[in-house]
Length: 267
Image (tube, rainbow, N blue to C red; front, top):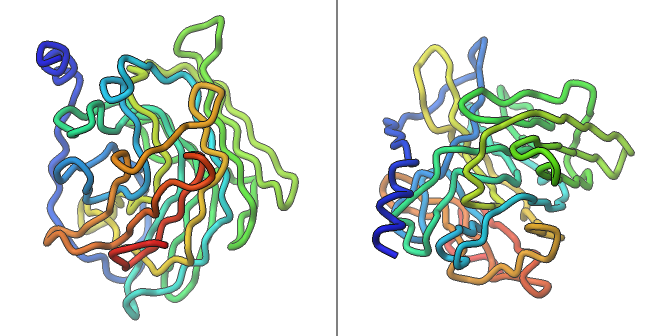
């Protein structure tokens, strides 16, 4: 096991960020939904939700992930502050082992964004393969309360050829993108995130808005129920370890959970 961890550690690329507050909206903002910034086994400076890893799952590699959710309502946590959040599912970027001694540097993902910017609450759908920025799905309107489904599946015939499907079940709009991407297949996750925002101030982790309860359901991995367990939960904390977003215990036989923002618990 120790030798496997050492080999996998070569795949990890550290990400160093300086905490900063975002002020009012600035032009030419790019959003990046980054790999996990771990603070121990079950805490992170950018993720809240659930993460499964190949070592934790006794060698399981991940070739498919999906989940459903209702787009949460975003409201300002601090008056006048630009605040950003993203709900997504993905493969790669998370903890490979249960103690999070090794993280993964690849990540293919898709989801929705819920932001508060100059007093507005803009919503959108997007997909991303790092190291590139998020790509907004421009022909898919999204609003709070819309029922979303996201699926990311590797071709059974062509390795590292992925189909990303984003569906707004409330409007009937469907987006599909097939794209090659060299994934390590080491982790799968269902996440509420504060993204990395690049603007004129530099690279910062975004401030988190208040969100209505985020309810992620129908969590699948490799074509069947994910079987989420409590040790896989990740709590989002600030740089002083104060809780920003906390997942509930697994629901519906390990295929669902909630996330509560600015709370130390979620019931």
